[in-house]
Length: 70
Image 1 (tube, one colour):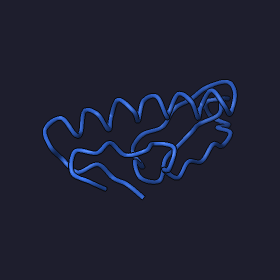
Image 2: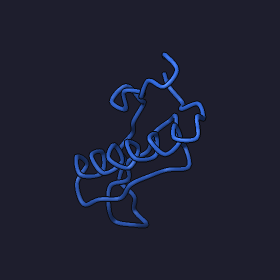
Image 3: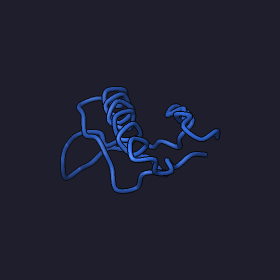
Image 4: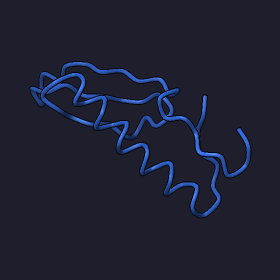
């Protein structure tokens, strides 16, 4: 990836599973293992996590840090 180029968040590795404890779907991303998103449907969980990652990757790049990529 070119310096300053924003990673394509749709290229990350996602997983959406059912959380018995939370009684909702939980979306996770292999490249950002500490982040997750809960929602009542699988697609809402995935879209919520993608939206959060869009902001997270922008915040990481502001100070010039390297963003995880595939």
